[in-house]
Image 1: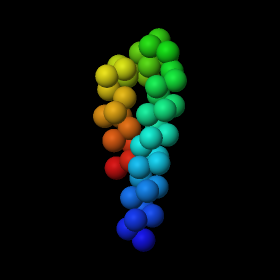
Image 2: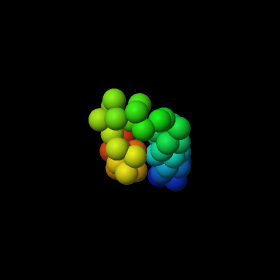
Image 3: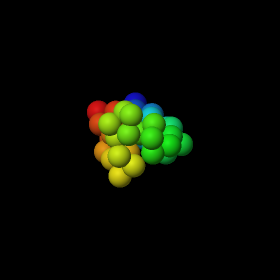
Image 4: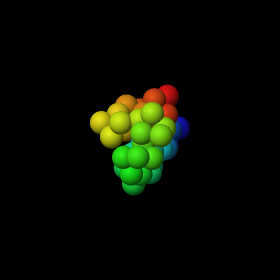
Length: 47
């Protein structure tokens, strides 16, 4: 089960990065996220 949990966590992380990466700088700013913060936000999302 550990492998499937790890895969699902990775998949969720990648999906979050993809979705945030598609947003414009203006949309990210409205959410209070800088483009350089995307990876941190994605890591926090899977915890």
